[in-house]
Image (cartoon, rainbow, N blue to C red; front, side, top):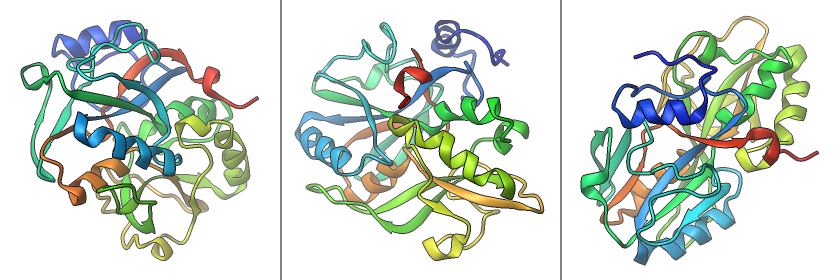
Length: 263
């Protein structure tokens, strides 16, 4: 089922909960925050919280739910993290076991939920300033790449940064940096500009997650820290069970992006 991009977050979450929508959420509910998801058992929660604090670019914390709590109260009024995301990834001992549309049957009372900022949230501001967002234009998921940039470790959590890529016309690069810098809670300014090989990206047509997009003559690949970084780190840390969003499939909240922006 296709959902109108301007639909309200409550309506979109209802359709997701019904199983009527399971696609990436880029471009949906312009103006409203979108969030990445990480759910771990309580013994791992403190180290992961510390990891997020030490790595605010890829892991900006929007909300943390207490053990067993599954209804949000900040990013949205009572969204259910068990059902209101289009697709979830299930990792056991660092291995992706399954991708599912609901995790109600897996829920445990010692699960701690982290909701992290997502760069989909600043795309509205780019579009309002006539800066193209190619994956939205082409109806694709944003391309995401593993890099050689190390993150700061915490407990068992360590690894390398994952980035999203958006091709930006050369004359608009500075403006794109200025705009996204205001949105530190949803990854903020880019971490790298051009020269993908210098951060370990060999081929922009073969992203590690998401879909490849067209890069036109006169455009520069710009890279932002990505909330999929925890998934790459969790694969290396190998906790017994972790649930995340499937890359590109976010929780759409009720708060406005502008409420997170720096004036």
